[in-house]
Length: 287
Image (cartoon, helix red, strand yellow):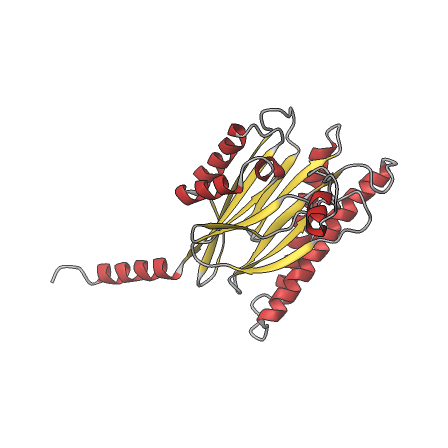
């Protein structure tokens, strides 16, 4: 378990696990938990001949590097903690930085595909789904390309926060007659095309919230109700991650499986209790 960022109200802790699964020989999934940036993300690579691992690793590395550069520039300019900044400013600026980071990841993989002589739409690619915690707002900004997913578990209920960018999902929503497309046919991914259109969203978080990021090795095989039931009965995120991987095995998942859980906890009550205890201790000496 790793504590990522803390403000006066909330702390975010995150952990993740990934495995090749029972069928695949290689794991092309990757995930990142970056303490300093409050960043957690999942990438599911594709491309064959080990290109999937290159794509997912490269996308996450470029994303984190871009956000780190932006964070360093802000610190140098002294803009962190600007007393005149508004919530809207923080949301807008955070979204702009995330957009640049996703674009940077896409450009890197696209140029690598071009260098290999692979035309637009071909070559390696990766899904990219994640979030960045904004402690000052008690919220997260999410970003999403492909069909990895972000869920929120709150008060016993599990809600999907992202929309699969797949031909299957589009056909479902449009009511297209006839046979539905394959579930894994992506409308876009990081790398195959020069431009990508990520989905961004803003989600306020509360103490007790649990956010789940996962690749389709989990959500493509394990029923939604069983994921929710496991999160309901397993309070420890590390044990919950292990339990979700076990569920994917029990449902005979034929894909790589990655799960990442971010939990939000109140910090004020804990700090107040420590202060009261320390104050009491300082007054409890011999009369």
